[in-house]
Amino acid sequence: MMEKMIFGRYVPAHSLIHRMDPRSKLMIIFLFVCIVFIANNSLTYGLLAIYTLGMISLSKVPFRFIISGLKPVLWLVLFTLLLHLFLTKEGELLFQAGWFSIYEEGLRQGIFISLRFFLLILMTSILTLTTTPIEITDGLESLLHPLNKVKFPVHELALMMSISLRFIPTLMQETDKIMKAQTARGVDFSSGPIKDRVKAIIPLLIPLFVNSFKRAEELATAMEARGYRGGEGRTKYRQLSWGLKDTSMLIFLGILTALLVLFRT
Amino acid sequence: MNKKKLVQLENVSFQYPLETGFALRNVSFDIYEGEWLALVGHNGSGKSTLAKLLNGLQFPQEGTIKVNGMLLSEETVWETRKKIGMVFQNPDNQFVGTTVQDDVAFGLENNGIDREEMVERVKYSLEKVKMAQFLDQEPHHLSGGQKQRVAIAGVIALRPSIIILDEATSMLDPRGREEVLETVRELKENHHMTVISITHDLEEAVKADRIIVMNKGELYREGSPEDIFQMDEELVQLGLDIPFPVKMSKLLKEQGVSLSRHFLSEEELVEELWTSHYKK
Image 1 (tube, each protein chain N blue to C red):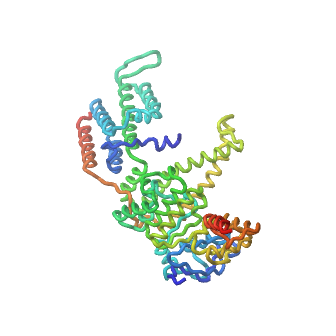
Image 2: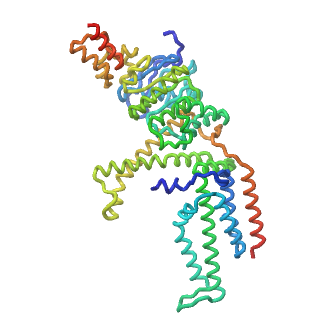
């Protein structure tokens, strides 16, 4: 189940968005997060919405995957909407029932802010749905590379990320195994009061931790035996290739930004 | 044997920090080019420590280790690691990459090999261990034997002259073990690789050209598999288990069946049994 949460996000396909360089995707997301705040009227929000929908259709990810990614944040969006509806008291009065009143500005703000939320989540979903975690790691490593100059351990961070990604399924298998072993010894994980269930996790966590330490040590030995001595002088097997599509996508986002600035009020 | 000495150990002693007593005491032997050497011994006999010393993961307090005539020291350790590849016991804990090809490339990346060359070597090494069709597979979808073969591919991609198997088959099921040993045997025969297999499984040691028995940090006995298995009771006392065919031939002899010698493999024993019966 947890595996689905972390890895099931990626939907393999051969769309334009899938084939884009992870660096350009990361840059676009970052810029998008910034320009979302430029929009302040229906026209500009409309432009952003059209752009986002366009990206979704280009990614060829089935719509249900995108919807399932939205579910967990739906409440947050709804909460924002209600907060604005109730608390913003500007503009014309639209509706009143006793102490409860809705103003025009509140409705407008509420819709815009939740739309902003929605668009941000949609765009980041497109990133995780079309890019494997390891590609994102590679992209980040490459983008953060200049930070090496200020002694920021970029390579180490990327290695850490890729090792954790590699070990997540292994540790899940192990958790499963330990759980079965402890169940066989009479530990009950699934019933009883919360207090007992939390207690039951202890005999699961301790072996898992002990084994992880052992794994870490053995992995370090194996890495050293294979000639690992830090990022210096290392070449990279995975290659990122920046193509015309990446440049054009960025230029397109630039045009969108210009339009937003032009039409905002 | 008039072969080239690839590794020379001279009076090597080693003690782990904070421990009393030596893990290795005054060990000297040579490893020849192109041979399959099995280092056997009970837990704590010092055989795994030897592997660590050969790869420069630890350095001996006394004595010297020479690899290809070059003294192994802090300065030469990275050169040595290119010549000696190691496969460890736990298939999972030596798999660094997120996919098969990334893992094979890991050692190449560490040594700063150009990308074009890397692609070629990854492909070549995976073909050698018959894992070429698993290029993009993730480790948790592979069996133990497959993971160990990927580890071997990672080793041969660096083109070492020696490959050390440090209990590399002990966590595998019989089929995985056979796969791995078969792969190593092929590499040894077709690519003139020197193999050092560290094991407590004497069935594995039977296949070696030469066996060194370690006990309590000392070199106990050295010889061909035939010589070593003549020791039978002595081996049991050292905490080692005798391979089934050897045990069987011994028991048969006790029952009065005349056999010309102790047989190391099941086929040889069967052959002897049915032909001897036929002769009567």
